[in-house]
Length: 209
Image (tube, rainbow, N blue to C red):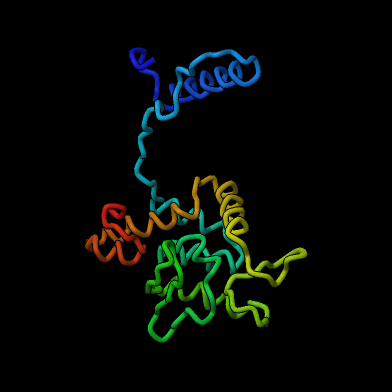
């Protein structure tokens, strides 16, 4: 298959089928056969670089985002580089409007970090907070309809919202792509890699690279 220049993913698929067939022969047919497709034989798959959105795609995407909550969530991903889990766990007390900062508590790897809020992200967040229902709930972003109304929106709930807008706008976009777009825009603006690493919350600079 390598000589035929088949892709590693295709070859790995064949290996899985062969391994499963020999497991069947051994377990169900009780054949005393050695499995030729041993674990660890799979080929390493290449990891493509993360994709980012072009400026025009960002504009088209946000044109279809109408809910103030959703605009605020996605703007924080795009401008602050927040992960979807960090958006879901963001609390009112973590926002410091006086310093234009957000304290991200227990990010990936249980790390805290400070990110800076751009003017447009701050405006979007303020617009949402003005219409956010009065509640004792400290999580910023809440479910707006259904039986879970008033409860914090889940990670999957946020992902479903971006999938909806992605389909509606015709722009393939994910929560993580907004984060990558922020990093790319910083790089294009000549920000140094260490600064980008700090803002994204990467433990190793090679991840940022």
